Length: 323
Image 1 (cartoon, rainbow, N blue to C red):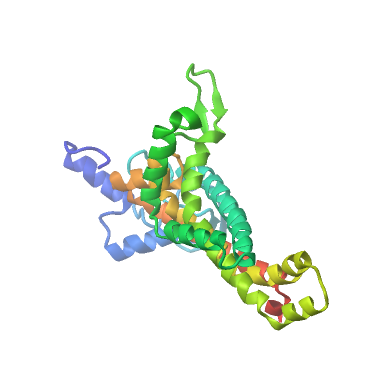
Image 2: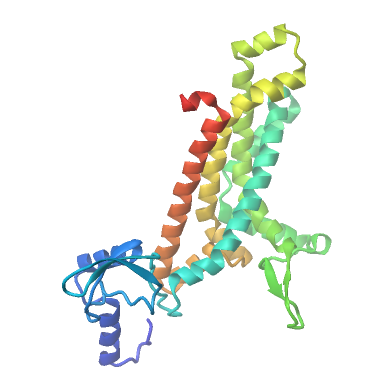
């Protein structure tokens, strides 16, 4: 894949030697983990490419422990390998694309959370009303709508059929070169359609969860006591009921935010948003496995970090969790 179909055998063998592809699969796996780990073994023999780590070629490192055979235990940044297609470091490619994905996911989860919680509160207050039944039907439809189909539908409707009214483009990135090539400009309108597409499903989940959780809290004994004391409706909802009803909602929001980091794959590709999803699809099409592995690892790390933050948030919102 790197040198083409007409490459001679010597060139292919040299690349296999450089990347360690001529080693047993188990050793290749150990070599990948060794490069991935911040604390890893640095071999002294460059021919042993699986465990030889060139600090000038990859990234700076600090020697922790030297061995007798000139090897060393080193502290370094995780090395994810190089792209098969561009030969650039995978970490550099991800570093360029990750901010776009984070911005898109944050915008989508912010608006879906805000609108979902507000709509869920009113649905709980006006239980069994026309509004309540309508939003439940719409939220059920939103949860059953796959992201890739929603992207095609929303892009076709707002960027093609209604393009004269919306002025939105089907594809575009956050920063784009102008038509005259004079500079790169911020294009905030390009985030509207992909963010709207990503927000559809979490909005539906947050809406229903907010409604059901608030209804459950409103039926609790301490809420009846608050009514008996003559507290105002607004104070009961916002000072007593809503705070206790938010815990399951926060769980859903955190889970969906982590899922959005992976769910952006098709959405980014359809709308031409150059984030992690866009480069993952291109990497899969080109069999660029180091880049795919690197993106999956980064998404997994983000997922773990978000769940840790959620556990901390639980303790802040609900003192019972700290006991």
